[in-house]
Length: 215
Ligand code: C5P
View 1 (cartoon, rainbow, N blue to C red):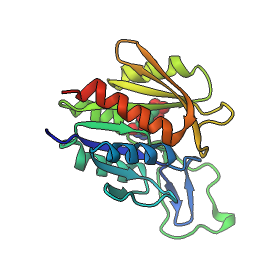
View 2 (cartoon, protein in one colour; view 1 turned 180 degrees about the vertical axis):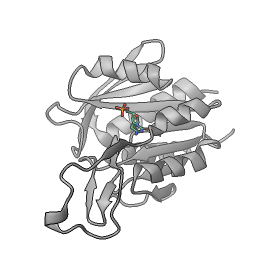
View 3 (cartoon, rainbow, N blue to C red; view 1 turned 30 degrees about the vertical axis):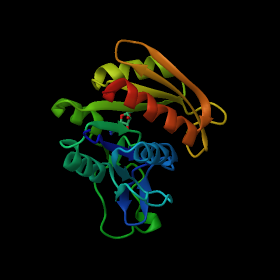
View 4 (tube, protein in one colour; view 1 turned 90 degrees about the vertical axis):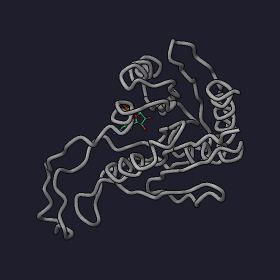
C-alpha cells in the first residue's frame, strides 16, 4: 500500500521590522502540531512546517522550523510536489513591513507609520499549481464564521476548510480546546463539535483518511 505523504503547517509567522520587533499573532501552533501527531500516528509520512513555537519536534515526523511567511512559502513549495495532502493550519501573518532595518531602531527614530505589504497567500499560490493534492484550509474568524469559510474554500479552490470561531470562549488561539466544523467542497458540513485539539486532530485525520484515501 502506498504511504500517504502529508504536509502540515502550524503556528504563527513573524514579520520583522528590525532585529527585535515584528508583526505576528497569538497562534501557538497547537492545532497543527496535534494534526501532525495524529497524521504520523495513522502511518502517514508527515512533514510539519512550524512557525515560531515553543512546541517540540515530533518523533517520527520531519519538523521544518520557519520564521516568516516567505520562509513558510519556500518550505511548502519544496515539499508540495511530493505530497498527497496539504493541511494549512498555520496562522500566516497577512502583512509584513515593506522594509526591514538591519539594526534595532532607536525609540525616537521608530517609524510610526511603517509601510506594510501583503505576504504571499501560500494556500492560494499552491492551489494554482496543484496536481492531485488534497488541499485543506483553516478559517479562523471572529464573526460570520461559516460564510467567510465557504468563501475561502471557493476562492482558494480547496477540498475542505475547517472553520474555527476564534472569538468563542474556550476555543481558538493558544487554547488547548477547539471547535471545528469541516466544510467540504460541495457544501456538506461535518461538525466535529468541541474537544481538545488532540481529540479533534485525530477525528479530522481519521475523517480525511477515510474520505480521500480509502482503498
Ligand atoms: O484568507 P485567510 O487568511 O483567512 O485564509 C485562511 C487559510 O489560508 C488558512 O488555511 C491559512 O493557513 C492560509 N493562508 C495562507 N497564506 C496566507 C494567509 C493565509 O496560506 N498569507
